Length: 120
Image (tube, rainbow, N blue to C red):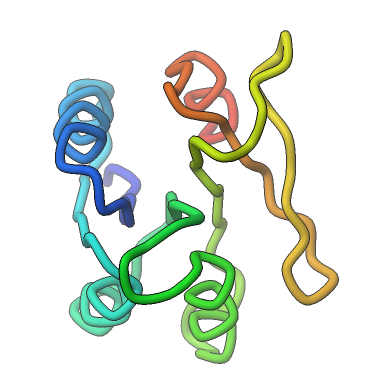
C-alpha cells in the first residue's frame, strides 16, 4: 500500500508539480491550499506524511502543525516544512522548531532528490 502524502501549499504550480512527481514515484497524494483545508483533508483520512508550507493564506504553517499535533490520531505523523522564505544553502535542507519539536524543512524550489530522501 503506497504512503499517503498530504501537501499543504497555496501555490497552484507547487501543488501540481509535487503531486505529479510524488504520484509518479508511487505515493498517494492529497492536497489542500490552506490550514483549514488541511484539517478537512485529515478528517477524511489520516495521511502518513504531511508536507506543510510555512506561509498559508489563513494561518502560519507552524500554527496548522500545532493544531494537527493536538489530534491524537495523527500526533506521530511525519511533517516536513516547505518554504520559499528559508534560505537555500548548498544542501537546500534545514529545520524548523515548533513547540520544541524539530521538523525538517526544504527550501523552494524543491530539490526532489532531497525530498525523496526525507520521505524514505
